Image 1 (cartoon, rainbow, N blue to C red):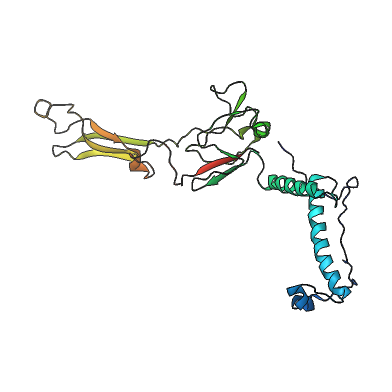
Image 2 (spheres, rainbow, N blue to C red):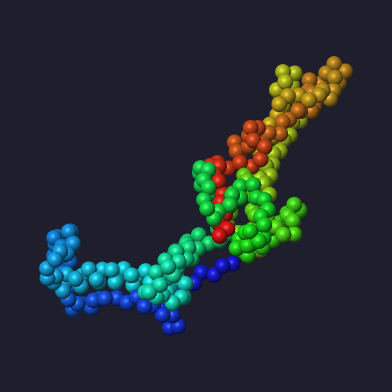
Length: 267
């Protein structure tokens, strides 16, 4: 996986941008005066300029340039030169890109509640296969972890996130593994020993998802056996009777949620 270097001052790099008039006793016009100064608002005109005012202008630009150059030096560990404007602009761009990796590394998945398309990101809602050469930086992170039987030799798979939710892994071995849908088993018990002539249960005991519905069959003929009881009870197995989370309207485990789009950063 791409490393994230949080730079520090490197003795081997050169930074030609230096601060100007940054000491406590520097000859600078006080900020309170400079804020409302006419020269700050309209610029200098012909005449004699005060050194404290000129120093304030130079210091602002120098400090800003130094901060940008230091950002480049620390992020890229490269030399920064004053005289090469094109190189400086390229370095500044690459430093910003490199810094963005720290916030959203390659391989990181972003979610959106609306459809979006972002440069450098690829949708992974339904998984799929990508070219190892075109998406080489992402391949360096994912490898063959999500390959399927449809993945060609020059491809690699990306996660299939359709109707799946992220869940924190308990072990390193679990990371990147799919979890099959499932629910805890729901038990129920039932006993129906008989009913009287009115169809009332003489002895019955039911719990959980099992509930009595009606007599299933008459085990004895009342006239010949001189009995007024029908033996056998029809029962119903209905999980929703035991827990309202079960419903006939869904066919899989469905927590409350919001559909969104998943995007993987690949460069």
